[in-house]
Structures are given as C-alpha cells and as structure tokens.
Image (tube, rainbow, N blue to C red; front, top):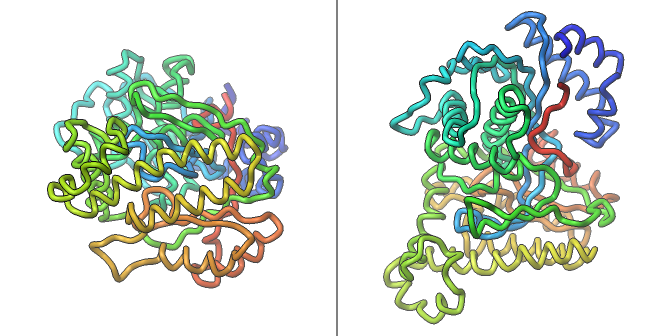
Length: 426
C-alpha cells in the first residue's frame, strides 16, 4: 500500500489515468479528476499525516424509470453516474471512525457504541447505522479515519446520502472483510442506516444504484433478496446524452412530502389486507375504486394508479433498451414523466406551491428540445433536478439555453458508470 505522498506523485505523473478513465469515461475530465484526487490526498495529509492509504469511491445515481415504485416492492431502472463521492482512508483498529467530509468535521463514531434509540439527521448517525448494519449481518467492523469529498449534488435527487452510506460500507468491506461483502448487501445496510438511524423512509433503489454500477433493473418483489439485472444494451449507440439539470430547489424540510407517498400507497394496499401495492392486483384495485376512495382519499388513489402503470412501464423500457428501440425508450421516458406529474404528483410540493422550479425546468426543456430529446422529473421529486435524454449533437444547444435560466454549471452532462461502490486504488 502506498503512502499519501507516493499517491500524489503517481497522480502527478499520470500513472492512474487509465483507472480514472475506467471510472469517469471522459478524457476531458481527466485533468480535473486528477487535481481532485490530489487535492483530497493533500487534505488527508493535513488531517492525519503521510501514511499508507487506500482510495475509495461510491457513485451517485440516476433513476431512469420506476419513480417511487421501490418502496412498494416494485421494479426500477436506474444507473450509476459519473458524479461520485471519494474517500482517502486508512484503518486504525482503535474502534473509532473519524471522517472529515469536504469542510464538515463529522462527530467521531465509536464502533462499540452504535445503539441508537431515536432517529437523528446527521452524518454521524448514518455512519453509526452502517456499522450496526454490518454487525447485524455478522460482519467485522473497526475504526478508520478518512477524508471524503463529493461531486454528488446535495438535495438534488442524485442520492448524496446513499453515496455516502455506500462509501462507508465499501470502506468497511475492504478494510475488515477482505472486500467480500456483496454490493447488494452493502446497499441493504445503507438503506437500514437511512431508514432507522437517519429517519428517512427511502426505498432501496438509491442505495442499489449507487452500490452496484452500470445500467441496472431491480425487482424488489422480495426486498430481502432483490433481483438485480444488468441491462444488455449499448446506451451510447442511441446517440443520446444523459443530462441532469439542477433547478436549485432543495429537498430540505420536505421529508413529510416524501413520507406521504409510501404512506398513501400503503393505505390503498391496506384496503386489501396487504402491506404494499406490489401484492395487490391492478384489476382488483380498479374494481374496488369507489370503496377505496372513500377510505383513502383521492391523492392516494392517483398515486396507486401511478404505481401500477409505472411498474409495468419499467419492463417495457428495459425491453426497448435491449431491442435497441430508441423511439420506444423515449416514449417510455415521456410516459413516466407524465405519470409522475399528473398522478404521483411529485413535481412540486403541495405544501409550498410558490416554488415550482422543477415544473419550470420541464416546461422549458420541452420548449428547447422539441424533437431533439425527452425529459422528466428526476428521482424523489418535489425539488431538485430534472433528467433529459438529449441527442448528442444538440447537447451544447440544450445546455446553453437551460443554463440561461438556472445558471452556469447547472446542466451536468453525464455518463453511465460501470462501477458503483469500489476500491479505486488499493
């Protein structure tokens, strides 16, 4: 294992360029990524000294289809993206986990004291939850110290928290379990940390997409053992670029809006004595619509309608991808976006109707793109980002025009990344 100074020298001499290309897939990014890793190493040295270190990364994610289906044990289509969180780390074996994340000094976590009675919205709580998740699975844990830095936009639907959790789990896997913990298991542990320790009722899609890598479809019918399948397609052959536009809305203080989505869907399932909508037949739902409506109210009905259609739509979009059917893929993306807007109703927060940045982003994108691409709300919704699949030869036009409204640097042109949570350099 090489020391911090040895790693810096190797980066400066371009010895890791091939590894960076494997992760980021863009020669134009090499100089910036090289500088980013060198900067992280220098920060680590200022905090902990020049010592042998490993370097880790966990991807951000982009949901392609399956909007709010995972928490109902449905299907999703998602991708690891080339915005990530990286860590310079070394094991300490003193029982303490000490992390500085960008300019935030996280409270140290004692791995022997990870019981938590109440959820707590803090980074330390997420670390504590991941450690406890490892213990629950009978895996080894101990201390490490790390410096982390992230490109994943906070509060913008790209799963910055999931990327952080997966990164902590990846470090523990390699430092104390020989790197043998399956990434699906790390994803489940990360979800446990966010649900139980942080108090956010997310599904498992975010963590799986950040952890596993590539373009994947996941079936959560049995959430204890989700079926993860790599989608067999060359997405680049479609001639489309994935653009994520940050509309500058924050997810802060919107937990109640997110929580209402699974709660209302489960209220419909409860009518049939089921816990989740995946266990309810769509035909039976429609046959009992009037009675369910009297019990749950209208929005729950509409959100259930979204689930049943979106769950089937995922399979249709996957089929279009594998058949190299660009038109079918784009049709599915538009249908998914329309359903999210009209039925799921997660494009803006009902509790804050004066702020509708995502709605404006979608309206502008449709006007700019015309027949050059398609767009939809991205991720959990309510605030944050939109997603656009744009013809490669029109990306610069789209980026220029959308950034006139949301600001320079708000349109991120991304690639799908083959690795999720990973050891970059051992």
